[in-house]
Amino acid sequence: MKVVISGKGGSGKSTISSLLAKELSRRGYRVLVIDTDESNFGLHNQLGLTKPLELMDHLGGKKMMGKKMMESMSTGAKFTLIDEKWTIADIPDECLSRKGDIWLMQIGKVRHFSEGCACPMGSLAREFLEKLTVNDDEIVIVDTEAGIEHMGRGVEKGCDLVLMVVDPSNESIRLSEKIGVIMEEAGKPVHIVLSKIDDRTEPLLRDKIRLPVVASVPFDLKIFSSGLMGDELTCSSSGVMELATFVEEMR
Ligand SMILES: Nc1ncnc2c1ncn2[C@@H]1O[C@H](COP(=O)(O)OP(=O)(O)OP(=O)(O)O)[C@@H](O)[C@H]1O
Ligand SMILES: [Mg+2]
Image (cartoon, rainbow, N blue to C red; front, side):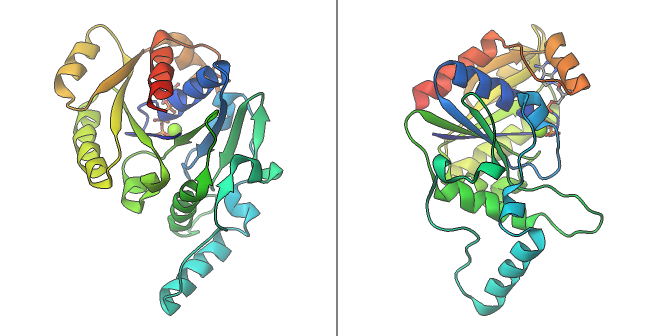
């Protein structure tokens, strides 16, 4: 099972990825969290893990990947960045950070002024997810960057389920309509997780959103403070349990 967590910037994607990973590991699954967001740097903190080596660096770095992409474009040769078929056990140790049954890997981050676009990261994420096979007791959670660029790149191709995180904002409501259309094209099921809601905003969102809502995570001061301090997320909520049960049932 490979689950993509998508949504608007700041809606709570990384928070929900981390809380879901923790809840699923508590239920006995090995959970691999894949950080495909090239712009954010705090997911490992939320999970209480150290930062692993980025897969892109392990494979030779962004420059080398960009060169490979350009070469294949000019020669028309089949473009591959990584070897066929991977299992979680094949992921090099230096690219993994672990605590119990939660494992974290990162695809690659933007680090320098004028270093160029993030295409190599997007291509690597798409290819890696397509070639990664998982066992029944393993769940992969893919934390994405804000918006829909990853969908334009086809990162969801190798995944089974898309969860869109919706916070109480008009932009999130609009984005849910767009994501519904794009994922229908891709033939991937998409479900909604409401985030940072309260008694007043939840019914409003439920009324506006056309896609199926499978869980609601309320605004929680403990989550907010951990986020502000960059601390590990240790709290959970009934919404996260509801979400974990949904993911289990979709397996
Ligand atoms: N349920 C919640 N209750 C209170 N605060 C929350 C909740 N969920 C997320 N937050 C806070 O909202 C902010 C954004 O959360 P998060 O980083 O998870 O969003 P994101 O969608 O991953 O953002 P980005 O698009 O930048 O990757 C953080 O400060 C986080 O602590
Ligand atoms: Mg994030």
